[in-house]
Image 1: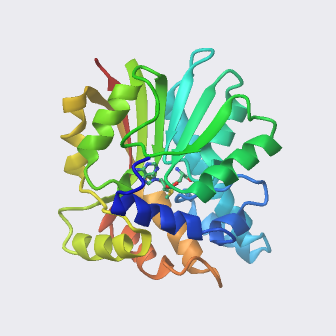
Image 2: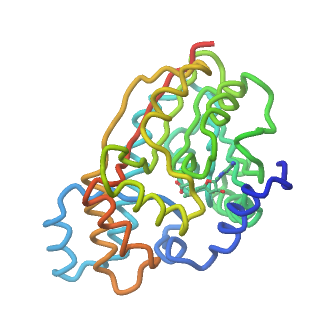
Image 3: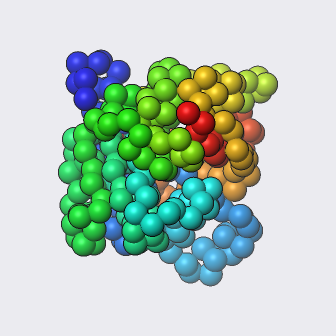
Length: 277
Ligand code: SAM
């Protein structure tokens, strides 16, 4: 990783600092997520909590549901396929994918040295170290040869990338012809008068540079990534943030993230692309 790049250092420092945080507290199953959840039925969710269910456990489950929802867009990997987890956090999605597909080889990268070590420890605990490896590296300058991957998973990591064209070009280099890329991202609604306001609040809190949809639709084609599918998850994720807002102790960002998604000033999208080299 070009550790001298000030922006990457800033992003890395943020995740190095998040240790016994909200995400860690929720992960009683050892699968730590750093992404939104999906709540499909907000009224039923509230009834379960009113009936005594553990709210934090339900919120964690809704985050796991987001991963599972996204995995369907990867398709069923070929035996011995290789997947890049681009911006892997503490490895949550990689661990779930490794459990789901026994032949899948996974390489995860994060700019945080702490996260890479935590993800490696989690893989070891689950007996997955031979197949699931994590390193501190940038997905904008990957330490992998060209044509290494059949699948690329980027869940809530592209928000941190200043210029998405670099991400698309570098993942296209590292992936094989015919590879599938799945991105899940917070996207600024450029048509909404509050889009800039909420994106700025999130950017400040999360060290992001939230992009408008145009960058996910117009840029990737130049690197060979062709859009194959898109899903709008804003409704279920707005319900997730509303549930977090109702918690006594969340991460502290709920006050603006909940209305941002409820008003659709930010939208939550999944994009799936296929690579034509
Ligand atoms: N994908 C994980 C998940 O869904 O739980 C983590 C998402 S977290 C919001 C963002 C992740 O992107 C962090 O692990 C961060 O280190 C990583 N990231 C941001 N910029 C990166 C870059 N240039 N290269 C590699 N990882 C990056």
